Amino acid sequence: MSELANSTSSTTAFKWHLLAGASAVALSAAFSSIASASDDGNPTVWIELGVQLDRLTNGEDPYSPPFVPAMLENPFTPPDQVQKTPRYAFGQEGRLTLRPEDSTWNFSAALRFGRSNRSAKVHDENTFHTYAELIRSVPALGKYLVDPYPITHQVAGGTVSQKHESYLILDFTAGKDVGLGLFGSHGSSELNLGVRFAQFTSRSKTRIDALPNIGISYKYITALGSLPAYIKLPSSNWNIYLGKMDAKRSFSGVGPSLSWDGNAALFGNSETSEVTFDWGLSGALLFGRQKAAIHHTTIAHHISRFNSGGTIPTLYPAKIHNTARSRSVMVPNVGGFAGMSLRFPNAKVSLGYRIDAFFGAMDGGIDTRKTYDRDFYGPFATISVGL
Image 1 (cartoon, rainbow, N blue to C red):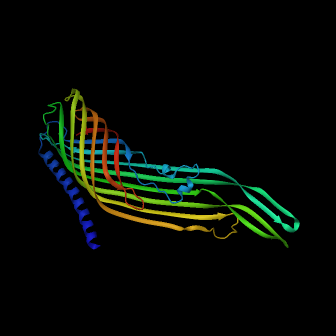
Image 2: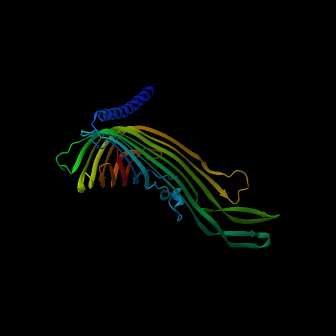
Image 3: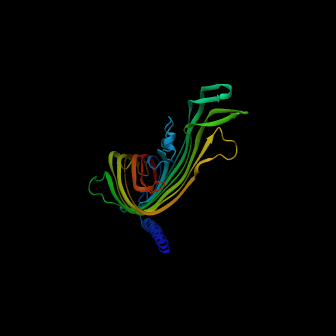
């Protein structure tokens, strides 16, 4: 056990040393280049700020306690429909880029952060009607009556779900304009090598209540005063169910990244203003830890109109499950973007569409591990200023 702990600690330390080392080397090299560069008026520092609206693919197993099939015998809303994960996340991003003068190199640090929330609540009710037999027999009085006995009751079911998601992506890169002879003086092509850190967190809470069906029970009376009798008195009985789940999930990983960014001029003049078509492809391999902590409880009570006070009898004892999983994983990441920019000598405004996919990043299972991808895709807008 201690060897496993030491191994985990060493792996974590190595990842943070890699991240810190790469960023320190990139920034120190950049500042050294800027300090020795000549002043020809071109910006050497670029600050970029932006926003994005991400469509999320962030699945996880829905909570479905054992009584849900009985609940769905009624025309109630299925609990898994209420537990859908958030569809969109609103995020911000920022980038600091250092471009030494008279150099084809650049060094940058970038951050993307976003979060999403979803709350849903559904309560369904249905009126239950049935008839039972009411039998009254008193032989000494010559009475024997059988009558229909109407029973009306409300059956109900409800689900409450809350989900919170967040993500953080950090990139430290060093890039070089490789040109490749594709665009001449009307575009650029850069290869970037760096380190990417990604962290995803998820929290979900679900509560399911159900009174799904009504049963008929009878009370028998064998005497009426001093006279022998047979009275069969019907009444209703039912089961009440409650299920609750609280789940926390996360992934944190760091690893090498490689990207290719390019642009080509569509029209305009680079010395005044121009419009360019931009694109990029990226890939990374993240080494990190995947965690899931799940707690869920199921309780059931049996109730009859013949119950006479005291504690409500349980249908079965409370079923409590606690699960905590932690696993070292390797997560491939691929992405890309396409867009357009309006460029000035000291500023740039960009609009585009971006995709980022992290394969098998999250443990979305409940009692057993089950991996799900974390994908982000949607429009973004940025504005850059050169200093």
